[in-house]
Image (cartoon, rainbow, N blue to C red):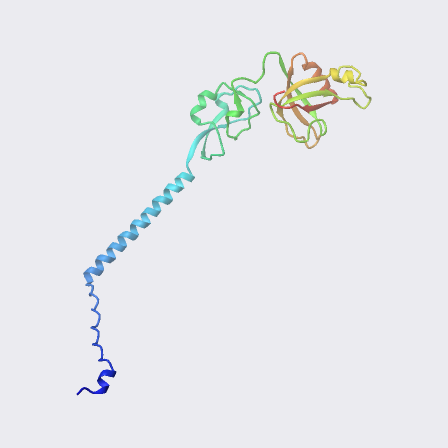
Length: 237
């Protein structure tokens, strides 16, 4: 007859077998792994060096461009002695003329005054002086209030207007300007050719303008009296 305690308690579970021991790596296997890691590390370092070198070359890529060897006046023909070659870092924000175009630049005309040491750009040179037949270049020494505060730029269309002097006459051509009709007669169309820098001593800015040959003398007379002002006209007028 079975004991009552035998049906009340389950039989003990068999003990689980212990986990297998990890394979023992031999010294040769460990050396092979070390060599692979070393080779991989060396390759990573070499690849990083190559990438850094390529990036450095891209950032410091240099190119030969044209520079001004000596000062050149506005309207002067450019000679080979006026040019030199500069080796500069490539910059997308700069647009100097490549040195390979040197022969094409020689013989062109300076559209602006060129200063020794500056890089030469296409906007600074042209095939001619920018004048057409029947034009004159006149210098206007102007003070604050005789031209717009925002300044002037080459190529702008302006109107030269005679203004009364302290005695109420324009005296530039001897024509009285007390009446508006006389003032209208001395409104002259012009194009800004060059804007000089402000002379701190005299507070005068010299502005070169291109005018019709018929108006050149009148504009020069007005400029000598200082009784004139410039009005900027809308583009395309």
